[in-house]
Length: 207
Image 1 (tube, helix red, strand yellow):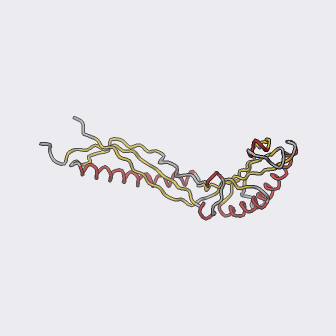
Image 2 (tube, rainbow, N blue to C red):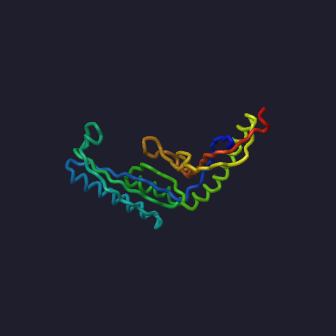
Image 3 (tube, helix red, strand yellow):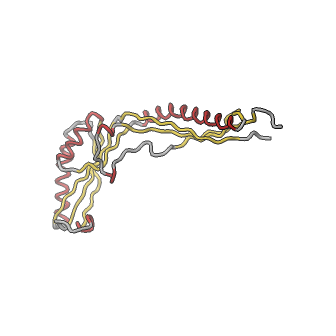
């Protein structure tokens, strides 16, 4: 007859200092005609990207395709001009440049919509490896406590599966617009979880 089993989970997490940042700026312009709105947005985008690029040679940018729409449909109310054009700029920079990049973008008229701390895949894998051992130990301890409470003991591991524990690796502000303190945005939460199945047997023979 096979041994009874007990199923438990364990998890572990750690805050890791950011190694770089990903930022998203939005540039917007209005005009009575769509072509004029598009041209103004392009001019403002160049102003913003020139200012951001001047911060450091280590700063890289990705210019996304923008859009032009009627102001009333975009804002949902009466606007000063008939059309609005928007452009989005994604920026990646080292940690030591993030404050200057934010200042350059905002002072040039761009809106900082998002700011995400980033760690390299190598760092993430190394941290997850350490956390896996911690999560596995916690699962084993939980199994042993549960088994002992029922008069059993753990005698072996039948299976162990690793999974994503949830939203440990995200950072964001309300309404998708970053408005927090940069000091609060300097870590990435890395986590790991395990689902384990242990074999158990009674500590004393059944009567």
